[in-house]
Image (cartoon, rainbow, N blue to C red; front, side, top):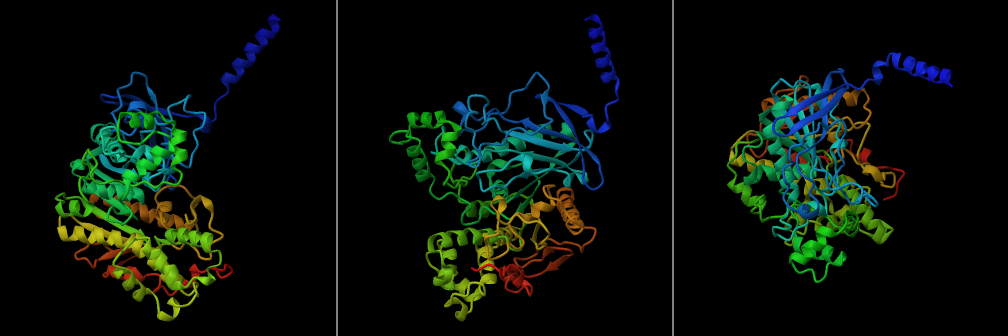
Length: 549
């Protein structure tokens, strides 16, 4: 028996003496955050040049917004005594597309207000890029945005998480449910950057907030908000503007009543009891009753984040914040896809629907009661022959321009041109025109049933900023170009590329603006974008010939 024991010890000694392969080692690094505590991070490498960078993922900036803190303004995280493990992402904020059944009693699933920091030099003082994810105001997470492209350049990247869905946006306009909680999360995260990013080699005086889709809408609202003064120097708005027709929640009171009744919270009058009921509902119960709800920022929240209508805030704006904003060429094709699904479900065979009826349905989603803009767009995009027939394939290019103009390009162009009139800072406008091998058309639900392709789809630009897809050689060159443009603007306030012409800020409501494609080109009349698909000689590639409309 003694011999067996000695033999066992010998085996353990031999195993421990074997050199561990380098790829198995997981080196770590510790940073002491002044006034907060120490965090343990680890290392990653950039994709193109294998530069090493440090990553600190899931650092908490706020206490868990659960229990009595649910729906309320976030509370800054208390300092911690033990070293915080920031080697992996924290949990994402609860969304209606994810079930937490059985987890509420094990972990606090609402403890999601974390941020991730990626940096290459702790002793430097580098420009900070602060990214706000999209996701329709009801989903999104830091882990969905890997940094291996952007960290090729000498910047510090910060990606915060913020509350989404009902747990973020539901409001009674009271102290118990003040509204716009995600804005308050983000403002607290920006304050964290001001206080602590220098510990990670970042410059708190040179912060660029950039966001895509819902993240861009939030970013544009932050630009206008009186509560954001001094927290950032520049913004990049990708495919989103608070000036959009659907950027503000129109019926927050009725939405509260619907959700309250669905949770059986009594008469749903605004009082302590109903607030208690909503705070005590489980996360899964709230997610279940909000499956068909949509969420947006609200105006006149009691904390004054958006104290007036965005147009009025823009009129009063007096901040010198540089802006780069733009859209993808076919940014509204996701709207066309959703509308097509709806029409097929209701009507089945679209051969009984005229082009005019189909187009009117798209335009009526905007609810222009005068119908003036409807009539102008109809005249601009469709011939009378096409309008009165059922040849939807012939109208496809017009459908693309219609959806993209109404939902994406018009609000973005309007925001940019009104900023130009203010003459407070440089405004750069772009159109992302590159169509690579990957697309987000259909998202995770697939797109094979559509009779059209997605074109340069909404959020396709992010494929070339965050390392989420495998890229071929041409796609990689596009990603390198995008990284140059985005980081140069964050560092110097001027977007530039080693392969392109000099890019100038807009000097009038017409332009100039720039196209991002295999080559960067400059155009001078942004109104050309309203018919960019119709005018494209290759627009037939959008048609899936083997699919009936």
